[in-house]
Amino acid sequence: MEHYKHTVNYYETDKMGITHHSNYIRWMEEARVDFLKKIGWGFDRLEELGMVSPVTAVECKYKLSTKFAEEVFINVYVEEFRGVRLRLKYIMTNSEGKVVCEAASEHCFLDSNGKPIRMERDYPELFRLLQANGP
Image (tube, rainbow, N blue to C red):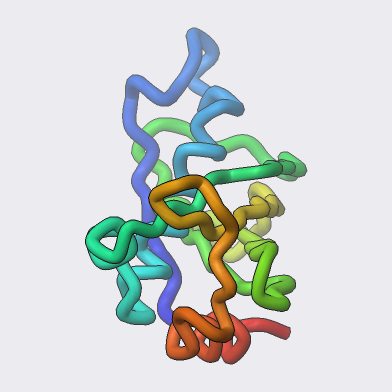
């Protein structure tokens, strides 16, 4: 799948001109939203179906700094999905192809009452797509 591209904004940098670490988490969300849209299950569709997918965990390993106007390419992969918990992996690289950050986020799928959704039974198409984009 095609990567997501983010250009570092000036407001995302600190006084030293380096991207503040908190922005990488926001970029993960941008890339995740883009990933779901590309597989045909954008957040608008999920919300129309009464589904939410909260973040239950996040981790980031910063490898290289990024700066204003630098392009960051984010590849999103399904690292693990068995129907309840979804773990996504993010590999962020700069224009030279060097890894700037390796990250992961974990999610679950809940209905509008906050109860876990049985993905394989209730949304078999999404279940198969998430498994197909895994390891």
